[in-house]
Image 1 (cartoon, each protein chain N blue to C red):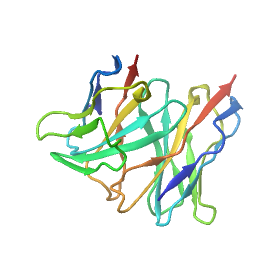
Image 2 (tube, helix red, strand yellow):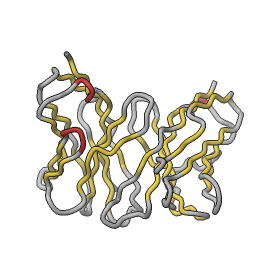
Image 3 (cartoon, rainbow over the protein chains, first blue to last red):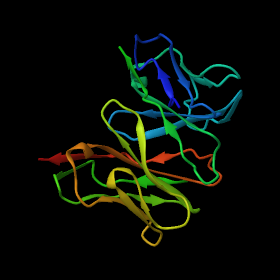
Image 4 (cartoon, rainbow over the protein chains, first blue to last red):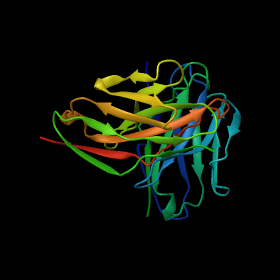
Length: 116
Length: 114
């Protein structure tokens, strides 16, 4: 069973460009979480999605950031007009469903975004 | 709101020595607690978790942690450190009603000296 897939693993963008980060959850998982890890800090929750729905986006910056999880295909985290402060590692995690006896999330290897 | 405090950013132990990584949480509702390990340039791997039941939980690679409600702690221990344990360790918390979104501590880097 393949784990959570993220691509690209490394992404370099110039200021003002757009960044698209992709996440394919584990097979059978329909819940996706995005987290951001800034240098010297822990992971910060950004957004929680189910197929075709944004459930909780309380951690998303108000501007330039958006996320989707379409019926078919991977979840996408999109950052428009990137700035140097967006440089970070972005992790995706998936779970079969929230709560229950597990509460467990499975993390992908992350996408490391560098803005020059 | 929930929070996690991991005191100190770096712990260094000798190979074979006891590993103790501290984690304290704040939560107004019963917490669910996790320890994750992150190796350089990799994603997070779950070491162990506490949801309900036994407060002493055992995880992978010989690690264990004890949930102490009275101390709001969930410290991670391993009796004997191995060189391969060198990594960054994150404590995280969630709770029922939080949609399982995790609140992480800042992490602790563990170094193991030969």
